[in-house]
Length: 112
Image (cartoon, rainbow, N blue to C red; front, top):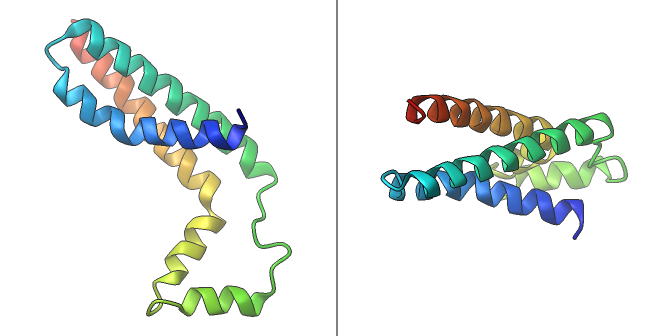
C-alpha cells in the first residue's frame, strides 16, 4: 500500500471518526478504541505533512497560463482549489494538530 493511499485512508478516518465517537459515547471500550485510532491517524498525517512540506511544489512543471485558466474557472471558485493544492501539506498538518489536540482533551475528560 502506498503512502498516498494511507494518507487518504487516514484523512477519511479523521473526518468520520468523530461521527462514530458520538454514537459510541456510552460504550467505553469502543469509544477509547476509536479515539486511539483517530489519534494514530492524525499522528500519521502530521508526519506525512511534515515530510511533504520540505519538497512540495505541485506546479513546478505547469505553465502559468494553465494555472490562471484553472483559477478563473467556475466563476473564480477554481482559485480556492489551486490555493488548497498549493498549501496542502500545511492544511493537512493543521487539521492533524487540531484532531490530536481534541483527542488528548477528550481522552483526559473521559478517563476520569
